[in-house]
Amino acid sequence: MSLRDTLRNSWQGINANLLRSALTVLGVLIGVSAVIILLAVGTGSSNAVASRINALGTNTITVLSTGRFGRGPSTAGATQSQTANLTTQSVQAIEDPTQAPDVASVSPVVTASETATYSSASYSASVTGTTPNYLSAEDYTLAAGSAITQADVTNRKRVVLIGQTVLSNLFTSGENPLGQTIQLGSASFEIIGVLAEKGSSGATNQDSVIIAPYTAVQDELTGYSPFSELLVQAKSTASLNNAATEVEDILASESDTTVADLPFSVINEGTLLTTAQSTSSTFTTLLGAVAAISLLVGGIGVMNIMLVTVTERTREIGIRKAVGAPKSAILAQFLTEAVLLSLIGGGGGVIVGLIGSRFKIDGVTPVIAGYSIPLAFGIAIAVGIFFGLYPANRAASLRPIDALRYE
Image 1 (spheres, rainbow, N blue to C red):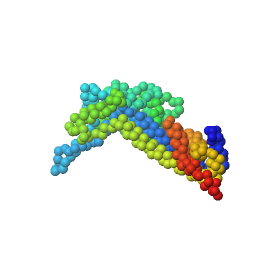
Image 2 (image 1 turned 90 degrees about the vertical axis):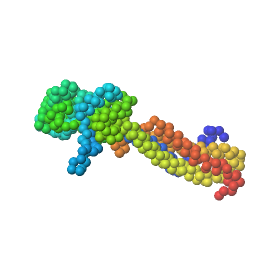
Image 3 (image 1 turned 30 degrees about the vertical axis):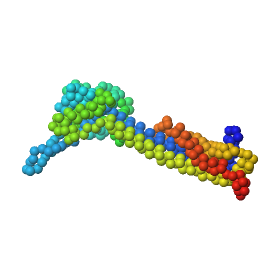
Image 4 (image 1 turned 90 degrees about the horizontal axis):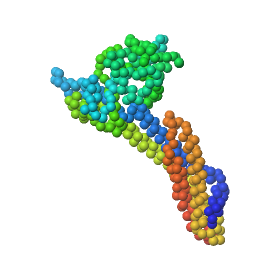
């Protein structure tokens, strides 16, 4: 029997009971579309996490002060913990290329939450006192005006850069904020620059920020206090781990302790990204496994229908074998019928998967993985062959006399 005849007979078999065939195709369609959509959700979630971490800077190290550590001198029989602070001496040591050759820059940070006021408008924002290197380390760019300079820090100038959210809350549309003075608490600061929109990182609005020289923030808002954190930028992503080690060694030496007992939290953003990617990969794999179960159920449906089809057409099989049809022809016909059902379901599943991946799911924008479409379609064909082989072989193995006597 030619391939054309085999396909024609298989198609006639499918059309013999359209409702049953449609339900079988639907099972495969749901499985294939589930694979594509869930893998797209996993990939989109992974990309979103990576994007948020990248927004923090993947070649940066954040040093957070934890306050106290170890044991100090006893007072009235009680032990006291020593105070650990991040100071200008810490910054200078980390900036020293002989001690930290893999460090590109260090940005000390002091923070305060203040209500910014301009004319009759007011807005509560986070004020970050820092140095010029902070902008590049945190990937901020200017939309207008100029950045703070080292001279501003040295001269303790009361100047600020404002984010887009602060801009929209204090000024009317089209109003030029440059050169205007805003009140932060009881102090006046001049706006010298407007930051370009950066968006949100998780629950943090990165545009709701005011950046000023840390010296001015200490003078007017916080009083003199140790830095709450240091933002260290490595020379490259490849040298990030070396830079982190150098920072830890310097801080441990300053605190007269070991790296294991370091009184600071040293957060390597590159390590965060690697961990997040590993977790997201596991999450995507689990979603794919769940979707594969749906496809497996669709395959069982194909086998079930094909077994019913073989039973219903037993006399037809007997007649064909009695007139000389070889076992291979019977096997090919029923196997082709199963594969056709899976192909139709797979094609429909791909279309539904592509359409479904265009919509946000629980706040996640799905991103179709390039491998998911051929993977899902290939699995659908494999399902048709695997689950259709047994019914087809059963049909081909019927003895003609038994098939003819079947009622």
